[in-house]
Length: 283
Ligand SMILES: [Zn+2]
Ligand SMILES: [Zn+2]
Image 1 (spheres, helix red, strand yellow):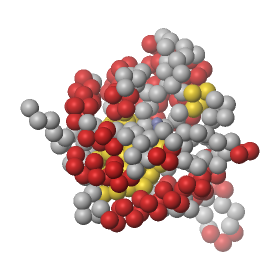
Image 2: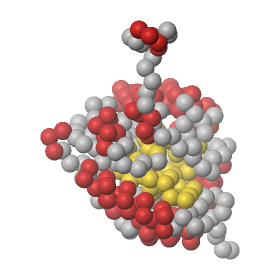
Image 3: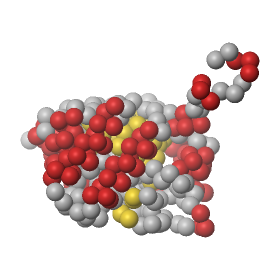
Image 4: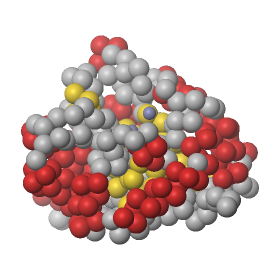
């Protein structure tokens, strides 16, 4: 039997490029593979550049000085392929409170359509606490939920990539309490949670059954994300079917497309009326 894509994945918003240093294939390869696979919307969300202090270099994200080339390349390809596919320019980024404003200044100086929140590290990566490291520490789990919740409150993120990245090995009741908080906060803000194909493909600790049981119970909206680090992931129909079966197990019905939230809103916050000092405004 021939495997087909439609209608499992018509849009993917989680695509990387070589700029992060650990993905393969140029943008054109991803775009052409997506078109062949019947994907109609392709969002690039490479690991965002982060201007860290003291010249700190991540090693797994594009550098700040690559931002211009990333956007120029994608703008040109968006125009070239506009008859065949919709292309969006985004980033997968962490919410690191100390450096987030500087990161947004850089990202928003260029064309950018959306951001997805992938909280790969707690606090920030200079402190080097990887979210995916096994832990039975409730404090670490709670900090992960707090940080994601604070990130979502900025209003700039369109979805949460692999929300189940935190690899908690402890008690079910603790996991339930903390992750329910994450799911409820995402639901309150109407932000979808991503079932991550890369984790599924590589049999990582995510997608995590107990997480998606909670998400189903809370009633979160859900989106599929390829997390493509190679073009062939965009046409891995067997993987798409596994993901569909996984969602089905929990009674989840992933939405086909994402509502994109404008990252520039970060700089358009209105002044709360109670803080208004203007004499003439009559508020
Ligand atoms: Zn990556
Ligand atoms: Zn990620």
